[in-house]
Image 1 (tube, rainbow, N blue to C red):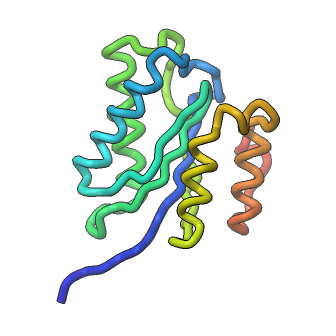
Image 2: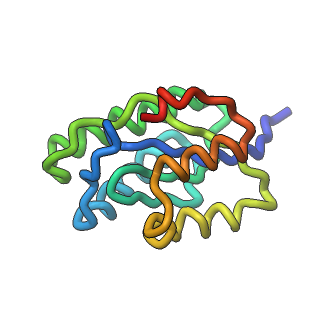
Length: 148
Protein backbone atom coordinates (compact mmCIF):
# COMPACT_ATOMS: atom_id res chain seq x y z
CA UNK A 1 0.00 0.00 0.00
CA UNK A 2 1.22 3.51 -0.80
CA UNK A 3 1.02 6.59 1.38
CA UNK A 4 -1.49 9.21 0.32
CA UNK A 5 -1.90 12.59 1.95
CA UNK A 6 -3.69 15.82 1.21
CA UNK A 7 -2.53 18.34 3.80
CA UNK A 8 -2.00 21.94 2.80
CA UNK A 9 -0.13 24.28 5.13
CA UNK A 10 -0.30 28.06 5.18
CA UNK A 11 3.02 28.96 6.81
CA UNK A 12 3.82 32.45 8.08
CA UNK A 13 6.99 33.76 9.70
CA UNK A 14 8.55 37.16 10.14
CA UNK A 15 11.91 38.84 10.23
CA UNK A 16 13.56 39.20 13.63
CA UNK A 17 11.74 41.87 15.62
CA UNK A 18 9.54 42.30 12.55
CA UNK A 19 12.10 44.67 11.07
CA UNK A 20 11.20 45.85 7.59
CA UNK A 21 14.37 44.55 5.98
CA UNK A 22 13.09 42.61 2.96
CA UNK A 23 13.43 45.27 0.28
CA UNK A 24 11.47 44.84 -2.94
CA UNK A 25 14.63 44.61 -5.03
CA UNK A 26 15.67 41.09 -3.98
CA UNK A 27 12.40 39.53 -2.83
CA UNK A 28 11.96 37.52 -6.03
CA UNK A 29 15.40 35.97 -5.55
CA UNK A 30 14.54 35.04 -1.97
CA UNK A 31 11.26 33.45 -3.01
CA UNK A 32 12.98 31.47 -5.80
CA UNK A 33 15.57 30.24 -3.32
CA UNK A 34 12.90 29.10 -0.87
CA UNK A 35 11.04 27.45 -3.75
CA UNK A 36 14.20 25.42 -4.42
CA UNK A 37 14.41 24.36 -0.77
CA UNK A 38 10.79 23.19 -0.88
CA UNK A 39 11.38 21.29 -4.11
CA UNK A 40 14.49 19.62 -2.64
CA UNK A 41 12.31 18.43 0.25
CA UNK A 42 10.07 16.68 -2.32
CA UNK A 43 7.27 19.02 -1.36
CA UNK A 44 4.93 21.11 -3.48
CA UNK A 45 4.74 24.90 -3.40
CA UNK A 46 1.38 26.39 -4.35
CA UNK A 47 2.16 30.03 -3.58
CA UNK A 48 4.82 32.12 -1.87
CA UNK A 49 4.95 35.86 -1.28
CA UNK A 50 6.67 38.22 1.08
CA UNK A 51 6.49 41.83 2.15
CA UNK A 52 9.07 43.87 4.01
CA UNK A 53 8.74 42.05 7.35
CA UNK A 54 7.27 38.59 6.76
CA UNK A 55 6.64 35.74 4.37
CA UNK A 56 3.66 33.52 3.49
CA UNK A 57 3.97 30.04 1.99
CA UNK A 58 1.19 27.69 0.87
CA UNK A 59 2.58 24.21 0.49
CA UNK A 60 2.03 20.52 0.91
CA UNK A 61 4.96 18.62 2.34
CA UNK A 62 6.19 15.14 1.57
CA UNK A 63 4.77 12.58 4.03
CA UNK A 64 8.25 11.74 5.32
CA UNK A 65 9.00 15.36 6.23
CA UNK A 66 8.21 16.76 9.67
CA UNK A 67 6.62 20.23 9.57
CA UNK A 68 8.94 21.71 12.23
CA UNK A 69 12.04 20.40 10.44
CA UNK A 70 10.69 21.64 7.11
CA UNK A 71 10.26 25.19 8.43
CA UNK A 72 13.58 25.09 10.30
CA UNK A 73 15.35 24.13 7.08
CA UNK A 74 13.69 26.96 5.14
CA UNK A 75 14.48 29.56 7.79
CA UNK A 76 18.06 28.42 8.46
CA UNK A 77 19.10 27.93 4.84
CA UNK A 78 17.49 31.14 3.60
CA UNK A 79 18.97 33.15 6.47
CA UNK A 80 22.47 31.92 5.66
CA UNK A 81 21.90 32.51 1.94
CA UNK A 82 20.61 36.06 2.50
CA UNK A 83 23.68 36.93 4.58
CA UNK A 84 26.20 35.27 2.25
CA UNK A 85 24.74 37.09 -0.76
CA UNK A 86 24.11 40.36 1.09
CA UNK A 87 20.58 40.52 -0.32
CA UNK A 88 19.00 42.54 2.47
CA UNK A 89 21.63 44.64 4.20
CA UNK A 90 19.84 45.09 7.54
CA UNK A 91 18.50 41.53 7.75
CA UNK A 92 19.75 39.81 10.89
CA UNK A 93 17.60 36.70 11.07
CA UNK A 94 14.09 35.30 11.02
CA UNK A 95 11.98 35.64 14.17
CA UNK A 96 11.88 32.48 16.26
CA UNK A 97 8.66 30.57 15.86
CA UNK A 98 6.12 30.52 13.06
CA UNK A 99 2.47 30.06 12.27
CA UNK A 100 1.33 26.98 10.36
CA UNK A 101 -2.32 26.51 9.55
CA UNK A 102 -3.97 23.68 7.67
CA UNK A 103 -6.05 24.67 4.67
CA UNK A 104 -8.84 22.64 3.15
CA UNK A 105 -8.58 21.82 -0.53
CA UNK A 106 -11.77 23.81 -1.19
CA UNK A 107 -10.13 26.92 0.34
CA UNK A 108 -6.86 26.54 -1.56
CA UNK A 109 -7.72 29.08 -4.29
CA UNK A 110 -8.77 31.69 -1.72
CA UNK A 111 -5.54 31.28 0.23
CA UNK A 112 -3.50 31.50 -2.97
CA UNK A 113 -5.22 34.80 -3.81
CA UNK A 114 -4.75 36.03 -0.26
CA UNK A 115 -1.01 35.31 -0.40
CA UNK A 116 -0.74 36.79 -3.88
CA UNK A 117 -2.25 40.09 -2.72
CA UNK A 118 -0.08 40.72 0.33
CA UNK A 119 1.13 44.16 -0.79
CA UNK A 120 -2.42 45.50 -1.11
CA UNK A 121 -3.53 43.72 2.06
CA UNK A 122 -0.80 45.35 4.14
CA UNK A 123 -1.74 48.84 3.05
CA UNK A 124 -4.65 48.45 5.50
CA UNK A 125 -3.59 45.82 8.01
CA UNK A 126 -0.39 45.42 10.04
CA UNK A 127 1.41 42.11 10.31
CA UNK A 128 0.37 41.73 13.96
CA UNK A 129 -3.30 42.36 13.10
CA UNK A 130 -3.07 39.84 10.27
CA UNK A 131 -1.29 37.26 12.41
CA UNK A 132 -3.80 37.57 15.27
CA UNK A 133 -6.61 37.15 12.76
CA UNK A 134 -5.01 33.99 11.33
CA UNK A 135 -4.55 32.57 14.84
CA UNK A 136 -8.13 33.39 15.83
CA UNK A 137 -9.61 31.98 12.60
CA UNK A 138 -7.71 28.75 13.22
CA UNK A 139 -8.87 28.63 16.85
CA UNK A 140 -5.31 28.84 18.18
CA UNK A 141 -4.92 30.16 21.71
CA UNK A 142 -1.97 32.54 22.06
CA UNK A 143 -0.27 34.79 24.56
CA UNK A 144 0.01 38.44 23.47
CA UNK A 145 3.51 38.76 24.93
CA UNK A 146 4.84 36.33 22.30
CA UNK A 147 3.47 38.42 19.46
CA UNK A 148 5.57 41.48 20.29
